[in-house]
Amino acid sequence: MTGLQAVAPTWDSVDFGPVSERVDRIERLIAHAQDKRVEAAQRVSVARRARENAARERADTERWLGEVRADRQARRRDAADRAGPLLDAGVADSVSAGRRRRLMFFDADFCMVSDPASITTALLDAAIALGRADRGNIQLFDPDRGGLRIAAQQGFESEFLNFFDVVDDDRSACGMALAQLRTVQVEDVTRAAVFDGGPARDVVLGAGVRAVRSIPLVDDELGLIGVMSVHYGRPHRPAQVEQNILAVVAAAGARRLAHPPR
Image (tube, rainbow, N blue to C red; front, side, top):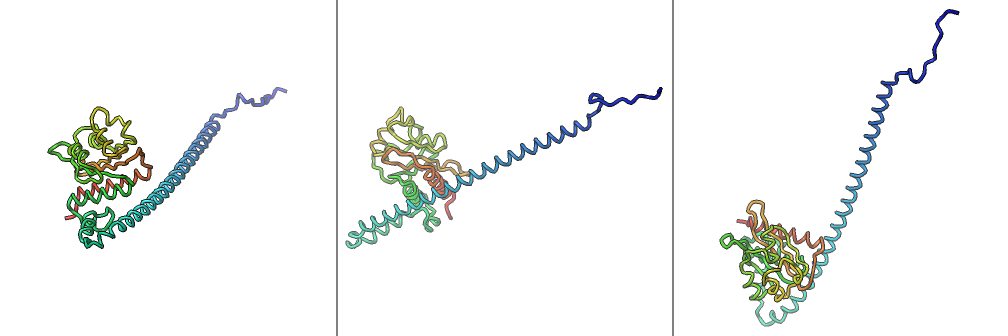
């Protein structure tokens, strides 16, 4: 026969170009979808951990506040027991007047106080009570002196008060908080580098202080207002919930000092 002979196609002769491109594109889409699924799973995992951490922090805060309330109730009962003889002696007016001057930070009356002395006293009361500290002070920034001056204090005597009457350097916890505009934690005064190079360490130790936490009081509009410091008679590092509470108290106090009611 002289007709054309049929030739069977081979793999080398077949053009798979368009099909191959579509397969590659589909595979890329599948890989991209898998990557997105992995990213979504990671975001869900991060969100779940964040919720769990928030729940733990909330529980820690509630437990801490419960302990603070119980501690304050015990102190009030003790104060009432000690005030009994004074009341019987006919000096009730002087006791009540003194207590009226020491407004509690979260009392409704605090919102009506406008003078800095009452605000700083109430702020310090709250910081010491909520921070379960032994003593403390509030220093306000004096632009004329270029440093901090004590506006309210609890638990300190003349040597400490005279030494820290004006703070204009960074060789103390409050001075570093002023200079760097950040919270300064001193866990042990005897070993803290911030007290190196000056007499502040001896003065602080002489006042019975072994640990300090100094928090700047800052307003968005006015800037630095002062520094709030709480002091402990033992080496101490506040738990995270305590740090959070003190930060909230300091922020609220700064707002009250910057924008008192008229």
